[in-house]
Figure: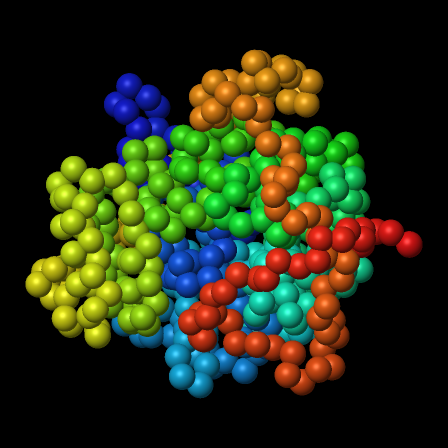
Amino acid sequence: MSTSPPPPSERAAKRLKLDHLNSDSFKNGVFLAPMVRSGALPTRLTALKHGASLVWSPEVVDKAILHAERVVDPVTGVISYNGKTRAIFTTHPVEKPYLIYQIGSASPELAVQAAKTVVQDVSGVDLNCGCPKPFSTHAGMGAALLTNPDLLCDILTALRRELPPEVTVSAKIRLLPSQDDTKRLVERIVRTGVSALTVHCRTRNMRPREAALIERLRGIVEFVDSLGAGIPVVANGDCQGWEDAKRVKRITGASSVMIATAAEANPSCFAVTPLRNLETTLIPSYLRLSKYLDNYWALTKFCVSQFKGVRSEMTKDEAHELKCRIIKAKGYEELTELVGSWTGDADLAEIVKSIHSRRSRPLLVDPPETPLSQLSPSAYNAEDYSSEEDPPLATPPDRPNPEPPTSCAPLGPSTAARMPQPALITGSDKLTPTPTPRHVSPFSP
């Protein structure tokens, strides 16, 4: 989706008419990944302005949303689901046609209740089956579901059965160490009736600093195609932006590509030409927008602290000083000199206009003539890899692998204290400790 007009020599593409999502909506696009804290409302709106096809909300634990109070701001239009102290989830009507709400759950009943709580304000619901962090896994959610495929599929089946047909249901998983086990899990997920499946091309034990195993995804994509269900597979892992998404799609054969880390650093990465000099082109408008939308200050400050892009107007030291100034501020008012007038209403109006004038911009690439698995290393496109080594097809040998034998977590909803507070509330964002290296397949008898 492009926010800029086509060249004069080209015939203008038709404006999009999007009543509701379906499986085709997950094809030929570039998506904003679900990210705790970083996937805040101002970031999602910025990503949509710059061409993101769809956006995912941060994961919200099922019980956290059940007793939230829905409040609509009559001035900004922001819809807030408020907890006891502050908003658990916020959205704006302009993003609804493109918004996927991600749920963290280990209970079909609670997942359905959570989805029905917000269903009027979203277009799709996604089950988090890949988060390796403790607030998910210790409660049987997130990546813990990978070792409990029965429960994972029960949740997806319940969501598909209970939600309106125009609301899509999808899942986001990680790779299992064994390609065969991954295919078995994927087949079961596809049979639940999901509209799409996202695969984060790392295993549960891998960390973001380790290269994603995107080459493994082609075999999974071809396997899903062979099932004949027409379910799009979305690739997630190490994509740097719109142009780089073409590389990922060419390698994996995936229907679409999802971006996380690069979008956290620069939400305009969905544009053909992303913004540069973020200190002057993005940060001031982001702060104005956040204040106008009443985005929680600490959350805004965290998001801005992650922004990083190509600079030509500021030195590294000047940019660092600016970030420090923002981080030390106690509230928006301390940054008036930086942003100028607080014209967040104008910034939102510009975003709304940009989204309403979106033009079709499908992510299309020429498929490789030969399956990737049959190519010799020298046959890979040189621009796809930064080294002469073979592309990685398995977890690096120095990493514990494969997955833990069990989730070691309560899997039923009967435990009253099952739900931990998400990182969005607690501020804790620790990585999951490395589990046991002994492999027991969840599909073994």
